[in-house]
Length: 262
Image (cartoon, rainbow, N blue to C red; front, side):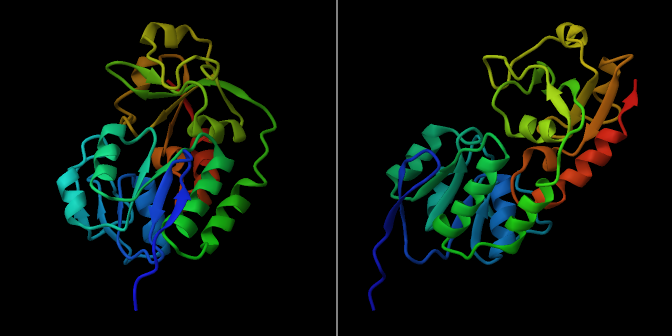
């Protein structure tokens, strides 16, 4: 029996993607999407980046980093679909994979509703799998989250140079739902570079330091904000969209509540 021809579907950017009727081999170039696919269909993944750390012990071929994947390795794995993200992966790399005949599905996520919708489409359309129960559980976990007050905050995501969350960000949307208002939400850039002196003068009531993409820790970051309340939070729960969303509200609330004066 002949395989059914691929269906041309639209990814989050509206780009046409020829998704086979049967998907059995997936390469993920995004850590959160790697965790998502592994949670839905463990045997579906054949390749992932070196930054794909969840689930622990994932035994698949590694294809390099999110910004510098080995195109040859990806092609050699003969994936039916390659999963990518508009800001985590570079367009020239994705274009090279498309030119090699691969179906590349790109996600675009700027807030929680977009994340839930995008994940549903990745699972049911790009991967041809049934919608998992944890996706509804993630929506339920965030549904009762209503901030009763707001704290003005800066959210550094890198140092040397210092960079912060700016406008139109998934992580900032999650924080807003927990009562943390991003002081740089109106900036023209999504990830503006802001000097440490300006950050100290920004008038923040709280400094939120996630442990990724830069690995801020108790000994690396808080010392730059003397006299400020600083919350060290899980970058995976703040910036990843996937199964971690089910526990993210509880984890982040606990870590924000533990903010200390430095």
